[in-house]
Image (cartoon, rainbow, N blue to C red; front, side, top):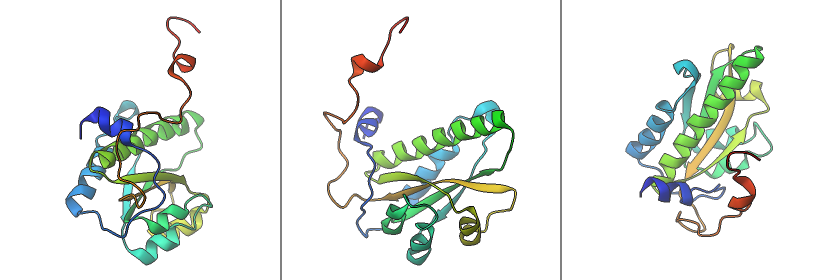
Length: 171
């Protein structure tokens, strides 16, 4: 798939087939996250990949909006340094967003659907994923093949009109 087609095809997928994602494809998705840009090349991330069904079911309970993780072929937890510094926090969140989107676009290019979720229960996430105490699980991304329809460019996305969003030279 071409980059523009992957961007137009990417949508949140919350229902997945039971088909596993080949290791090489999963590694390519993770490599896209690893190569994402970050402020001052900070790279405030580690990725924990979960493919075990019982662990995916448990991981889905760390946030009320993470139920899709239970059905996924794989989930990636984005682990980041904890911080109370507001400037560092904003940079970290922006950087993690870029890594998330890079992985989602790479997945779409491979026909793999994705959806992101927050993590509320940090203690439960830490018990499941065993990340260090000085880190937080910032987000989860579920990955799998869409159960309803394959990814394809969306001709009319459910988005605000272009002319209402784009302002040239001034508002």
